[in-house]
Length: 290
Length: 264
Ligand SMILES: Nc1nc2c(ncn2[C@@H]2O[C@H](COP(=O)(O)OP(=O)(O)OP(=O)(O)O)[C@@H](O)[C@H]2O)c(=O)[nH]1
Ligand SMILES: Nc1nc2c(ncn2[C@@H]2O[C@H](COP(=O)(O)OP(=O)(O)OP(=O)(O)O)[C@@H](O)[C@H]2O)c(=O)[nH]1
Ligand SMILES: [Mg+2]
Ligand SMILES: [Mg+2]
Image (spheres, rainbow over the protein chains, first blue to last red):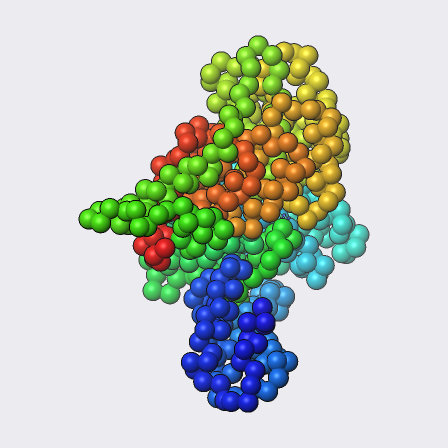
């Protein structure tokens, strides 16, 4: 990609006009790599700032400057605005004798339940006792899927390794029931039993499905989880931005609160299925969260 | 149009097909462009081969393949239910031993729709299950035998190898590639890889009830060189319809959507 900057080598100072055609090309290149065009523009602007008014005598100095500028602005986009430190926050909740609650949401089939299990494993490795709340009461096999994960996690961390305590428990009420109510019961149960963390699995839903988005907003409103995580799939490309924006919008619209709970963080799943990993950029920028 | 996630290659191909000079002066240009793009899109997803059809009165083994979470298991039941309602003797086999709860999912779906099913909680080899299930149902003279498999992706060779093993052992009459409509352009390489490994004969596009109108999916469909036979429009068993050349909303919608934001 840096080849397009070749013509800028010279002894004269680079002006805005010199840069424009090259940056236009760079933007086009980024867009062809699946970077949303507003973000590509942002990246180009930041490169422009670094180059304008400079005299760059050799090609290598140009390409180094462009690279550094790109790198810096990518990092800026990816760096979270709010710190999410689950382990520290969960520890704090534990000291206050209340369970720390994380809710997972997202569209159908993106990997909510799988990532919930992965985070559960990580929490258990860090000594936390976890309750999984089976609040996907719609999709066939959703409860059994979590039961299987619970069993496997407990096999990896048997009570003998943790002072006789069972590390992972499943709270489930089968299918068809109200998800918000089950989450509430699970959190109360966890509080009574001094379980440290509650992980709430929710059913997948399309971002335009109003009744289902309303139900999710209700679950989050009545339970006020400490952390709401949105799971997005790396493969979907630009569509992921729409999903995220609409989930956030729905949480705001349906909560009837001036300060609604919105999405705090994002899990990007199925990263292993794409060869070209530029999606991350636009995703982070749109969300403005960690 | 790029906004609608249509592959760049296809966009430029379309551009060269539409002859702007030939367009009549007074006509609404945008409408005209849209309608010709629409026609070209129809051609794009129409590979020119006739879709495979099951034959009444004999066994028709159909194998489902696709990426993780694309909707295979849900769609298996939808297809089985569709044929069952039309009077075919239909059954389901769960050859997914990887995904937690996979057999329970298929079992619950099948039970609800009263479709006979086969699977195992203990056998870990999907090839074994697929073979046993197909043999059993063949001997019982089932007409439509649908085999569900695990989700997989091309970056994991062993998963693709496993798919080939299942394929070689059951020799299906048709392989259906299930694709999520929201998939981005990256899926083109994935569908090509599936097509190269097993003989994909048809495509089903799922989740068309979502926001995405399949722009990204189009190039992926084209890569399989196989006809789209059904579309999924929701999570319920009857949110399913035959694909009649072009679905309303699938193309015309995303064209207007893309067209309004950014002119071609
Ligand atoms: N390759 C890959 N597959 C994944 C990843 N995360 C999840 N999956 C697979 O994606 C499929 C769907 O995962 P689930 O965790 O059931 O997704 P979900 O969002 O809970 O799905 P619903 O509850 O049905 O909406 C499964 O086959 C998982 O194994 C990942 O990071 N990489
Ligand atoms: N909205 C909507 N959801 C769908 C559709 N088809 C499937 N789903 C949902 O997508 C999610 C994944 O579907 P599955 O059938 O489990 O997908 P799969 O391909 O079998 O997944 P793996 O076996 O894990 O690879 C579930 O939540 C389904 O309910 C559809 O047409 N519309
Ligand atoms: Mg789930
Ligand atoms: Mg499945």
